[in-house]
Length: 560
Image 1: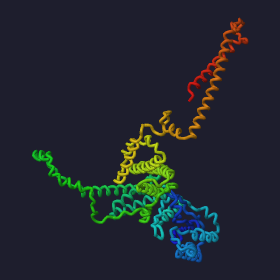
Image 2: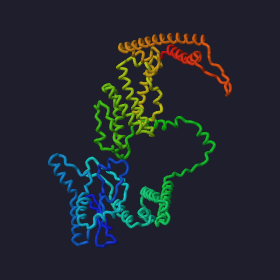
Image 3: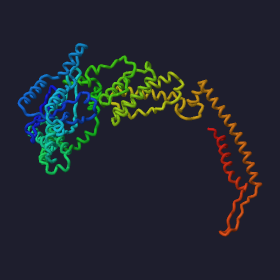
Image 4: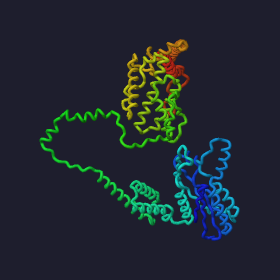
């Protein structure tokens, strides 16, 4: 088995010589780096099947070997042939040629070479059915600076080695205790043992030991018995853990200050209980100078904003409309940056007089929906989000009162002490919080009563009644409702009078009638016969008339 990594074409060719047929060699290939768009748009890890192109065979011949080596050499020394053609065409039409930020297409290996080999294969379908496929979860990353020609990506050599070894072991049908997972345990334990003897740094040993332990936990329970690497893994794991614990104790011993306590005398205790203000003057001077600006000592590493300096200075001081929070990206970092932009925009505003109220209300709703779900579990960020929402509400409240000054006579829905539990780390945020608290207290004092706008009441001083009294159309509608209610009430009274008359007539008929029900002696004993009887019939209908009259009375006495 021989894996060949053609770097320029982003492809790997695995050559194998079957044990049952020494006259042929098999060839299979796959793409090494997935496309950039696939990696950046996928959450979590990628699940990829290897090899992507199934197995084909070619005869072992001097001319075939020479042609194959020349083919691989040519495409290995001529990288990105398709990209060169596209870039030359694009350069003629545009001023900005595209940089090589995407991985090369492996089509010259996976398509062109595969088509040539398939034509030379005697039994392509039979050999293709012998292909061993495996599935791997790839944790790929793409990191790229603004002006970089190509992004940083992980080295694919370890992936190539794992695919070649795992497919070979699966093809040989080795027992599970000596399979690919067992081999990985042995390889990682050997590397970790070598790193321990080379006195590698603590953090590197810890990460490697954790990786080895995770590999050990992935091993099935039934495969651990009889596995040749288990004893070595446990031994190396304990050796590294003991070494790290030994190094940590040495660091503690070097950095721990030795304190020599002695028992104070009685006079020293009495002197220590007396407070001398003159002796505290140097300490008080230090406290007074604590808020003064202290120039930095030594060299301080400058903080680099994610995205570069151009991203840090992208804000427009004259921006009037709030930043758009619709269609936020799914990535947590990008979503946090967008929300941070919005919070900074709110913090820079001295007022929202130039912003439309509907636009401000939409921005508040979008921010509330996005920030509360992202900041869940982080008290500090939730406090900043709540402060931002309160400031937006203050701007909306000011606009509403400007539109209708009478609204300031009603207390706001937000208590003035609701802002006390916020955890704000910065001084400017505390100042913004103070201004919001002062505004809430001012609104509560300006209210003439403790009633709010959105409460259900028939009080004449409620906002609903006041608003109706200010509108001619609403007053006309209210009068129509009252007239219709009065007409309904008069109709119910007429219906109730008719029911009372019919009920009185029914009672008179019941009193004048005689019941014809009588007992009769039969062979089975004394039985009661029910011939037609007006009195019994009317007695059955009497409760129904009573319920109807009672319902009408309840409707008339409780019109609402």
